[in-house]
Each structure stands twice: as C-alpha cells, then as structure tokens.
Length: 169
Image (cartoon, rainbow, N blue to C red; front, side):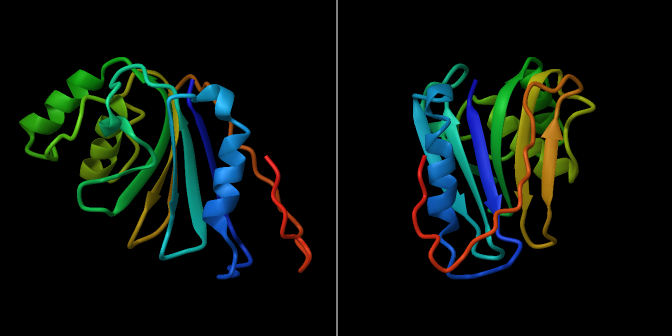
C-alpha cells in the first residue's frame, strides 16, 4: 500500500517550508512506497501533500503522485485500489468528461471523476481506497474514502517556537 501525508499550516505562516515538512513526513512512510515519491505545495494556501508510491496498476511514471488534474485545479494523493476503475473511465469517456489520459492508473480516473462530477466518486467506486484531494479556486480539501476504509486520517496541532527548525523523519 502507498503512503500519503500532508500538512496544513493553520497559523498561515508563509515562511513555513511545508513542502519540506510533508517530504519529511513521507520519508517515515518509505516502507509503504519504495517505487516513487513526490511532494506538492500549494501556491494559494499553506498546504502541502506528499506521496510514497507502491506501483501496482500503472508501473510507468504516468502514475506519479501527487497528481494534478488536466486543468490544474485539483491535486490528489491516493492509496488503495478501485476495482471498477476501467468502468468509471469508460463512463467518463462516454459522457465526454474524460481528459486526455496520461496513463492507466486508477488514481488518474479518481481525479478525473472528482473534476467531472465535482464530488467524491465513492458512491460508484468499488474497492479499498482512500485519498486527499485539494480543490483549488473555490478551496477545500476533499477526504475521499471507499465504503470500507483502509487508511486513517490523523490530525494534530503542532506547537512551534522560533527555535523549531529541525525536522526528523
């Protein structure tokens, strides 16, 4: 299973290196995703998402995460497997909502479904999966999960002082 991590600076301190913090968090998940890793930091809000990849469906670099939608509005980190992703992909193509597909990953299908349907695809997506998706413009973080959840969301408030400069992971 892949590993996902993220951080949101509720204090909105622009000098925070959220990309570095998210990368350090993801390093602690290295055992969950030895094949690839990536970090995305928002330019709109103090948010960063990180991913450790265990390649199963699409072994190419086209499955790299965090993954941005074709229009750049959505960014997702995702873990798990959607068993009927080819069916959802066909539905998107038949209704004219499909992007120019970059690869064959279920992550890209989830992202396209969120972008096309403006909501989470949980009602139609079968499998065991979980993800976090940033929706730019109107804002908001979507918590995407299958009906049977295989991961968890852990929240904490970190108290920082001016001397807090070392991140270990």
